[in-house]
Image 1 (tube, one colour):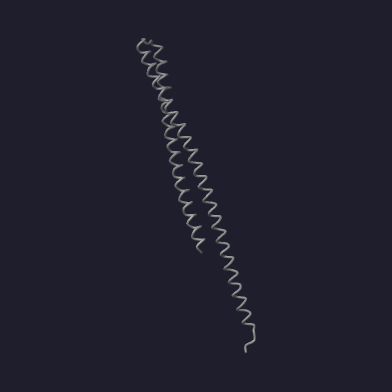
Image 2 (spheres, rainbow, N blue to C red):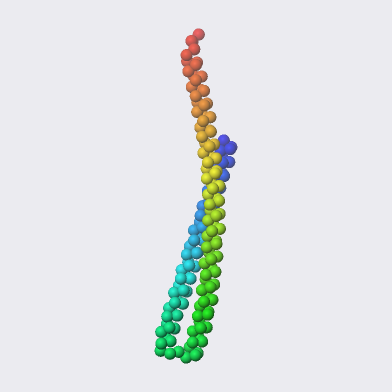
Length: 146
């Protein structure tokens, strides 16, 4: 019985660890999705600004306006590069959290398997004990009374 409670404790612990790992994985996925949305917005903004610049070229642009455009595009490209790095880091974190979750799940499943085996063994022993008691009862009942 002590073994059963130890296995049950391990199963509970592993289940808690797997649940926490799953929550961290979910948070990592959400963070990655958020950073990807920000990157998409920056890229869309860059495309829109580039299109406005192209339409401005048709009507003519001063050297100062062109310089301002180039400076702004450089800063925007730097922001895009930084956001891309954030997305890449978020994807790496997802992979790490997924690996952690998978490992904790394997551990939990292993403990569940052990607990199942222990339960079946206990049931088998109880069944043998019950069968032995029934056999003894039947033997006593069939003996002649003196």
